[in-house]
Length: 118
Length: 500
Image (cartoon, rainbow over all chains, first blue to last red; front, side, top):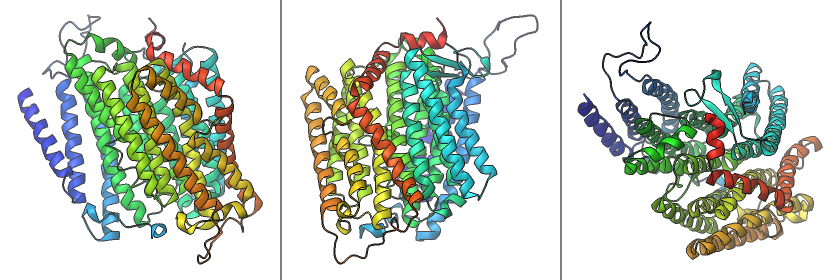
């Protein structure tokens, strides 16, 4: 399981970096999203995956007797997912608006000089 | 000491924003609420600063979960100073916005978003939990995205794409760092991390994690080679927004660098050298970039980059004197940079352009305003006894005592070029005769006296603060001295948070 996740993180990061280096705005956004997902899985992996051991203390005990699955990484990922959802939806609207204004998907076309500079 | 009042500044801005949302499209009410909110925020921030300065470090445990398990808010002297400076800058920007921001932007929620932004900044300065810091950063950047794009001019949106991409990328790096840190220590509380990091056996993975934080915060605070988004986006939004960004947003990155690299990680020789090299290159690239710019705001954007280098270099030297200089410079920089962009906005009101070759003769037309602006410009250039001069003495002294002549030289070159750029700005914009062939659109003269006052007063407030920092430098040095002591010896902070 861990090995699979490590490979997956590697693939997500590599694809993300590749997309970010492209000139297309849509690919830039996709790249950022892939990197974000790679990071989320990385946090999940680093929280030491423990299967079938929920963090619930038995009724007659005061502390954990056994190793347990750490809930914090999942809380962190959940927060990160919600935040990146908000950012991504804003970014999509922004890109759509920019595309409507300049009629191009190329990042190199984003250099309209200000009226004042001319 | 536990004091729940420390998050008052966060709550005030939250409730101001919510109240303003209730008065959607009522721009006059929103303006009054905004000024009232920032004024109250300033009073509470001043109160917090006095309490921390005369007393000890204050903490607050969210929902009474004890550190290191819950989220903890900590007001040490660095945090409370930053909160105080932020609230002064926010007060000035909010007064300026009342006339400096167009009605169309206000109708689409300029003021609520501005208050959400300031709330995020205050939260970022006060939190003692590294993941919570990430969340506050996100609050800040999502608010800044909206402020940057509000109005929807072509140049603005183009700048926003670059700004958005780099900032989300920075957050991803930061989040990766947080994830790694949790993986190796099992804690998110910064004071707890400070205790656990030295015990980690494999220190090379700690250094790797530190690099993620360096890149994440480096993008946000615009250090070389990660600053390119800043000059290509900061000149696009309205000046009030640019003032908030220039004065406060890059500085929250600097604050995070200070916090993480003095408390959580202790830089080793390699990191220190890296900081110094980055600082030197930031100073030089920023300064040389400023020389060739002809638009007032683009020029100021490069000066932001240039002066970030002084602070990063000071952090890299990592001696008491150097940190004192860096903190003092940060205090001076937050106020002056906010003011610079407000001045750019005022120049635009006066002449309808920010292109230096089309400007001229401001001194002949508006001598009083020009003199007010001169105070700010000269203190930026660091002419004694104004505020930019004192921290440079400390930085240069620290450079000499560390035998780091390259840094000393770059500080001198950076200051000299700043002086040159400011002198050129002064002669082009203020002293030069009016360019005869240009049609001047003065939108300042027809304004009512009250509205004129609203535009000039915030610049006056910030200029007075700058004068205070410069002329009462002894007091500021005492504050910076205590902050740098707390940075080098973090035991009081850890004790205050963990209670042991």
